[in-house]
Image (cartoon, rainbow over all chains, first blue to last red; front, side):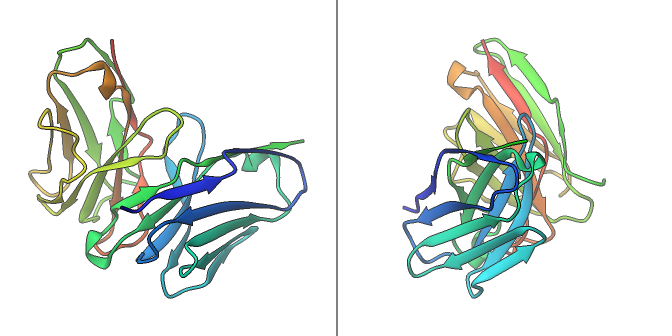
Length: 114
Length: 114
């Protein structure tokens, strides 16, 4: 059974720092991996989608990497801002024919202090 | 519509009552998903529709939970004989096709069972 773990559970940094959020998964037979952002009381916003054949994806100040063989992904946030404060969730998709059936981690709650 | 719309945003009910939660996906999206998120946890998969049919309902916790999507657009999640343990945020997501790709989430329906 696939399990997804995110470390740390919470992180507080001063504005301007570069930071890394970690995600690990137990079964390397994944189809893709997505990083989401969730603001308090809100739904999830997709940040980056990495297919299993890819090593990384970038969007603005965000860079996500995927090492399928070791069961790990990292989300790198450059020059953090207070507006980046949110919970970041990692989720893996198991197979092509499973569509959007994702297994989520518990999330990392990020706080960026001005 | 512009995004995934869920109603009601908040629902408070008494133990034993029947509840319906509605999801209106992004126009043209054929795949629709329901997830449940408990406090401090990542979302858990409930059911996935491809068109009108439930392609995978393996995440429904028991037979008190049922979902329909009669015309391949709007979906309703139905919970019978609600229990306090059903209290959670119910999230709906849609994607363009059933192929594993980017999911777009609604803001959720927060259900509280007293």
